[in-house]
Length: 482
Image (tube, rainbow, N blue to C red):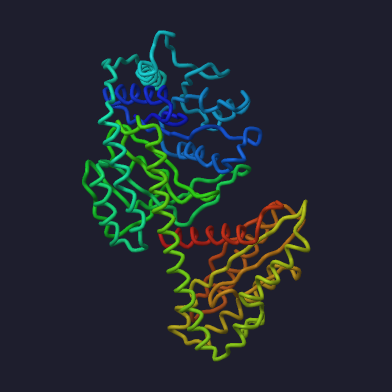
């Protein structure tokens, strides 16, 4: 039985007491309790310009949708403290038909029943008992306990543990072997249960459009009961299964880590006494975030070095530096990377405005390396030119189409037709099948991503290309898994 407890944050004593009561009852009744500290509902009307990315915290609630929760307990009054009643109702409706209990009255939803004399700790007990009754139809009772005092020595110990983690983030190199050091440092700091997950690439989460929970993530740090698990082969897993696959026993807390509007990953940690230090979890998030940021920066450095090496190889093979300095690809006569970006910026500046849509496509010649290796570069060049011809057929003359790497093409088109991307996907699928059939010596296989973007004044070419590229990488990974 899995139950979610949606709260604001642990810096409030009432919230801490509620969670401790729910934790004790859940353990006693055999319930897997997951706590979601999402701070609160942020809207355009209660947006805080001094903290423009505070809305990122509420994205943690989105992990509930597909994660197999049997019921939810929602502290809606605190979560929706600065939101109108319609926003509160909309927030609750997003969870569909899952059994839900709220801690305060909301039209259309059942409330946890308690007396004014009940403490928040006791309300935590009652919440678990009553959500189980709502789920199963059976009345259950947990053994009552008293919330023990938290001494000054306990608080100092917790603060020291956080302080001892202060230098570990700088050790987060983009090499898996270095995780041994990180695991050791976390364990030395007294953290018994912690699992850290990374998204493949940072993902934008905006206040206007929100975000979609990535389908895949990878667990890079695994510490259970004070022991680190050796991860020899870090694999991506379905994000919806993170709670099924978690080995942390008892109550868990899940937190997102982000920088500005980009989500980097998340972590799951065991619930314990540490949360009584008001900003304990925020401090831990900051430390984990800095480590993940360093990881991604070093990953970008490695990727850039690989790209430079690839460019050097292409220049050496082509024998023409001018092709790479100029704006035109020597082989296809399309714009090269430099030419594509120059023309794409000009197109957006002149044509992308209110009422129009930008369609961005990435096309990857997935089999080009095999064609070059088996049939020679002349045959590879022929395959590249054939793909360029197809792109000219699929996309309009007003589009900008370029060969941005040896085996990659990019296209941008501005149109006033909504859903034009879907038409282009259908045509690309038809042309891709035709391409596969027309050569008996080898497969000239394309993987492509075509995304459509509504006009927004703040939307940049970089953001559109990044989202399209991320989508292409997901498609590559899915083909690999398949």
